[in-house]
Amino acid sequence: SQELEQSPQSLIVQEGKNLTINCTSSKTLYGLYWYKQKYGEGLIFLMMLQKGGEEKSHEKITAKLDEKKQQSSLHITASQPSHAGIYLCGAATGYSSASKIIFGSGTRLSIRP
Amino acid sequence: EPEVTQTPSHQVTQMGQEVILRCVPISNHLYFYWYRQILGQKVEFLVSFYNNEISEKSEIFDDQFSVERPDGSNFTLKIRSTKLEDSAMYFCASSRSSGGLTYNEQFFGPGTRLTVL
Image 1 (cartoon, chains in turn cyan, blue):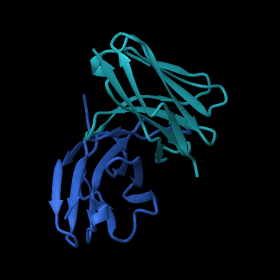
Image 2 (image 1 turned 180 degrees about the horizontal axis):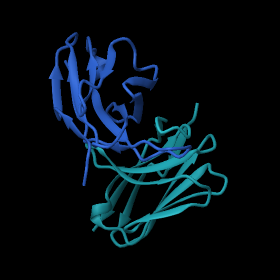
Image 3 (image 1 turned 90 degrees about the vertical axis):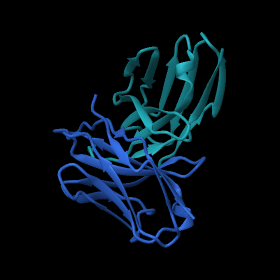
Image 4 (image 1 turned 90 degrees about the horizontal axis):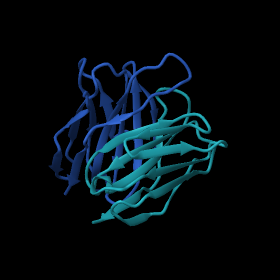
């Protein structure tokens, strides 16, 4: 079965600093999702990457899917308190619209003022 | 902006009781999902639903669970006889149809926190 490993598990950064979160899959990715979750709340969709080498941005957050399609990175530029939360990567398990998502364990991000 | 809504936000029930969790997916979406997240653990897939039938279900989704789209807007998850281990946050998600091999973003609701006593 497919496993997603996220690193680091937690991260504390000074406000204004840049940071990167990584997501590595045990199998080739059909598609990779990034979500943000505040503790005890729902998942907010950030972006989805499908093609190797694809890069997308949402405000100050950029995500990239590597060429071999087994790893993705999420980069936040000039972090702000609003970026704090848990970042989850998820892998689509097929090309079908009904394909389930397998999630990683998440990276907990705290921003220090 | 359209969003997935879920009710109730928190449900407390006694072990052995039936619960129904309700979701209203985004209106033009055709694919529906339930996931759950036990406190401190990963978000886990339960079931996907399309065209009034289950597309896929996980091993968690046993005979105690059922899903239904009773009308054009609601999508429900029923747990017939709740167990202590069913305590979790349950998320509904939806995605729109696609015409080919591409797939679509799944948008999640805020969740229902189920507590089984």
